[in-house]
Length: 307
Image 1 (cartoon, one colour):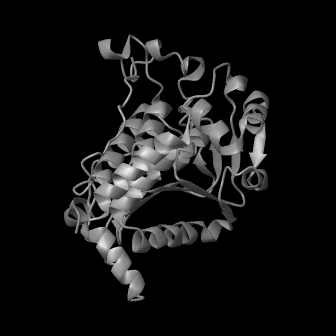
Image 2: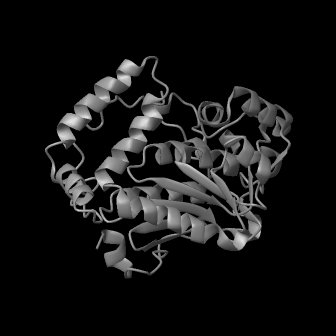
């Protein structure tokens, strides 16, 4: 039993320190729920900090095998930034709650959605976004860092930055074209129009659509398939390999990394168990845990600084 489950009981919510999100763990799956339904789960600074903390907690819990990110209520996954500050919403220097830049930041206010997206990108556990309604602005961009996105058939997406006089955030200029292609990304961002669920499916923004009342069951089933079949250490390495190496300038970069990782993983108990389970036609029981059993070469990249 991992730290979160020990603290709250295997099926209980861990919400004592959060006011804008919910965190729970059930059968090795962590559920992170944006929980401001009265404002369509709009993101404010407190939610950003709580999301970062929750992701840190589940990422270091060795018994968490997958993460589901969703929103509370039936109206929205996330309507974007909280605009209760009015015209100064994006004027960070005049918003006292904004996280102040440090010397290391080069005096630049870091985009809040980008901090969340980059933290999801760095996760050691597979992340599934279950999009239960409207996803606009930051709500449509933080999901791009998830490994798999599924949505209700009533979901809608909107990349409205040009209509708000700003630019795409949450590092979406990197994520979105890789997922849907440059032409689609430009069309969505330049028009800022509402993208219906069926178009999001057709353009590969989401993996599948579900009836609203079936969305979480489908997300849970997908998480269970991953948790029950993929070795945790393998899953952590696979998601980082695919995210980081797909943008390399030559496949040799991937060949170097996979050669090294197979060499390191091959003699380990997980690899022996995986082969034995296949030969014996049974379910595997992988002993490796994350982050404890990551191989010596992880991480194989040098993380860039914001500055």
